[in-house]
Amino acid sequence: MISPWDVVASVLPVYLLILAGAACRKTGIFRKDHDDGVMRMVYTVMLPCYILDKILGSEVLKSGTVVFSSMGLGFGLIIVGVAIGAVVGKIIGLERGSGIRTFALSAGSQNFGFTAAPVVEILWSTGALAVLFIHNIGVELALWSVGVMIMSGEKGLRWRKLLNGPVFAVIVGLTLVSLGLDDAFTGPARKAMSMLGLGAFPVGIFITGCMIMDLIGSEKPSLKIIVASSLVRLMIVPAVFLAVAKFLPLADELRQVIIVQAAMPAAATPIILARMYGGRPAIAVQIVVFTTILSLFTLPWIITLGCEWIGLKPILP
Image (tube, rainbow, N blue to C red; front, side, top):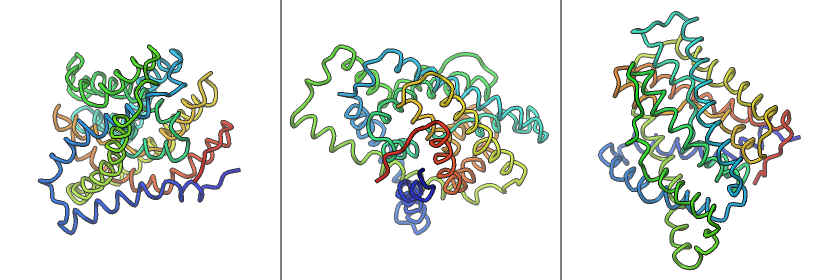
């Protein structure tokens, strides 16, 4: 039986990087005008290199069933989470115009990128990590289609938002794996790509901490929003995710991804959507900040209980 404290020790470096970013922002060491250039480098160069390096040679991705089920669950579980968020939002008295759409999308959307990927790699190694990147295509599709429609009231898919470096890396990687050409990419070029990608998540997590520090204190917190969103994001939705991992016939790597996704705090993307499409950014900010803080305490228990219930064991350092 794994211990929650073993999980804490394993994932604590991720949270320490967030704290380091927050501290550097607070002290002025890393200023806001640094963010754009660094994040552009991360998203357009470093992260695609990292994703491609992990996908190439991944045996599990040679199964079409795994690929499509990963994308499908990435899309579907976000929609389920948002629906739960909408129900809880109604219960606490939110209506259209008072934040119900922003609450539902924020509380229902888990972090699937900079916080999730290092945790997946620490606990499960590269097989599950490759599946996470495929899963995330479904999440991106859900957020920039259904998410935008919910927030704006408009119909249509924001295709341009899906044309980014990480998505391109996944498409290229899957194509090479499916054609059996991925093993040909070796030698100095592959090594250089791997080295360049290694910094993607430490830098991304560090800047996440900087941005969280920017958000803290920017809006007056609402106890009702904090409690209700924590209930959705850190209790109800994790139970649904773990039930899916337990009872659906899925590859072990996908089960591992879903266990980690169940434990994640709220994603930051709904803050962007709320600002772009007439939502209530203040609500999204509160949900992201407080669920991220609380997740340090809930994450080890969700992962520990999920692993015991489903019958999986992390590869702890």
